Image (cartoon, rainbow, N blue to C red; front, side, top):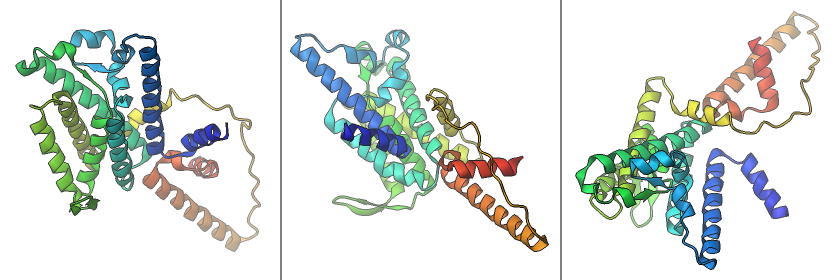
Length: 290
């Protein structure tokens, strides 16, 4: 059980990137193990269909939750490996400029945009008329592409190292991927490439709105936090006793120290978000806000 305790601690204390990786890996392992059970029982593994995103509008109406579940669902090892590597590499770049709430919110927004693009395209373009009833989508690709695109717009000239190619600006990688998605629409993975383009749109929309002082990603993350179980607190409050200043010099010194600490906390919120504050820092912020 020590390993399990370490995994739980890592998930609880890890970054939002770590948690997303754990969630995707957990879902992958659960469905692969279930597939083994179905195989040994001689049954067809149809359970996964209820969590994949169908292209058919009629099928989607019967399982609307799949617009969310599909972005955490993988079945092929190479598929999840590539997506999680992209999430890890470019999620870290994203976090150099934005906060954890924005990363989680954009992950969800990118997946939603990719799913909507996929369904609309399969039902609007005649080329997909014969395939719409039999096509399903799964994977986090649209979500991680949204994160990559937002990072590319934020710092287009940031150098990244690619195997066999060397150092290139991030904007060229993003451009190459967008072009490959457009070309790939006529290939064997049309649905996946359409979803990728939805992620591209979400990533650009996030950056464009942030540049104009608006943020649609953090509210998504905040909404999800409402469903997290609340930990019971053993302490309702804590009384802090502070020695009153002895003279004017001491009073001014203490006031300057408090002001410096408040500025440090505000800088930390701007860089990492409110959730990154410690309990003492939140109490300090609350005290100064009264």
